[in-house]
Length: 282
Image (cartoon, rainbow, N blue to C red; front, side, top):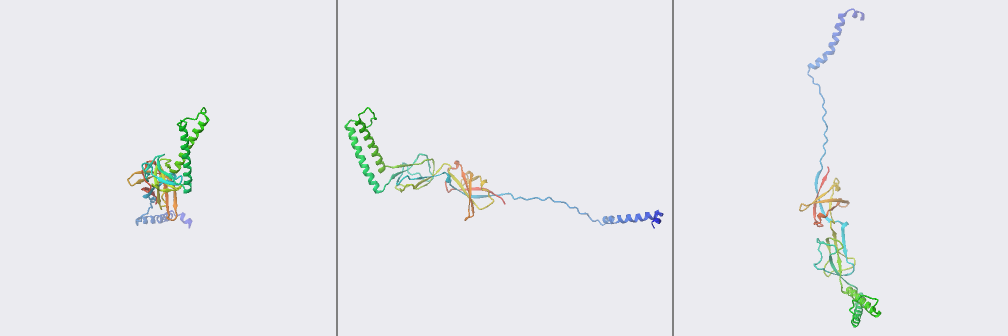
């Protein structure tokens, strides 16, 4: 059959045409039916990140324990007010200022012994003064080795008896000044006129200049307390905060952050409320 096809070129052309039409017809039919070819477009994915919100945390001005000074009684006694009265909480005091006077008290037996010693010292001082007057000395001459030995002894006895009498008198009837060692602000005072105190008892609590702090309590774990930098007082005064430390109360389930404040905010008082703005992430 192949030989017969090769000898008949008209037959070969007809067969080729039929084959070509068979390939072309589906395409034309497809176009004639109007079927649209869909194209896929890729839409870019946009990530939405929530911006941190801001909350206001309540804070409280407290005493910075690192700069707290407690003034105690050096011995048993009775408190007396100094000139101008006792310094009250909130008042500023200067270094060296007399905060109170302490009149020492003794047990009855000790006071009786001191009274006997004072009576003897007073008698010795009186006799030595009479001796000085007898020899026409005024008791103020400096010791000079050129003076006769009896005169030197007389002057020495006179001066020592005066010192002894003064010491015992001060112990029995004198007062001890309680002085502020440094400048600061009185935070707490137990000083009352006539108050009986014992040795080691606290009389004043003084906060040195710039010795205040701010505490902030919060429960949100997303708050970074080290990033809190400013607080606002009730009179809209801004104070700078410096992070100190942070603790956690397992019973209250609260974090408590401590911040130091500068000396410029020394007019604040312990217990005063403040507001602290904090950023909170979602």
